[in-house]
Image (cartoon, rainbow, N blue to C red; front, side, top):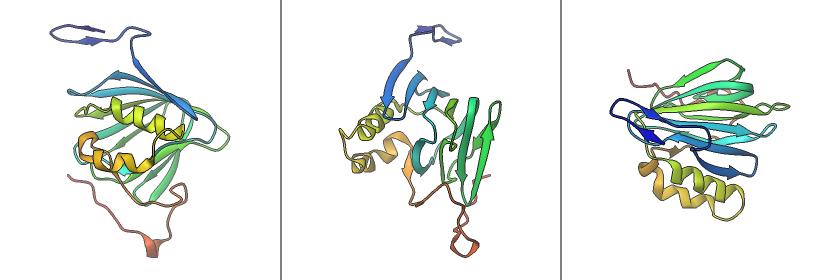
Length: 167
């Protein structure tokens, strides 16, 4: 990586990498104004457990394939060329749609140093660590876990807890 007084340049092959059971993660920039990563997921694979961010907006730009997002009480699919911007405090989860792989660029602003989080997710996906190991790290990584069982299914209206994003 080459840092200049006005720009960060990441050349091909310079990104940090973490392997997942059902995909791969490349960390392009960690912390600062923006965290940037590229995530690939196998057909129908989940991308992250349901969570929200207290500090950051999260942006997804789908390079290829179709993703499924749970955004609060709504489930939606977004295909190649689509963009999703998730405000702070909105519970969400995401993954590759059934029958589709996905290649996506993910931005977090302001940035949070999260590469260790993705390494831990990789270890969990490979059975090398327990999911509960993430719980004490929620504030550090601005990833606050949310209980959304079966997140790919929209809840019925009587079971919805509406969460309003901050203005």
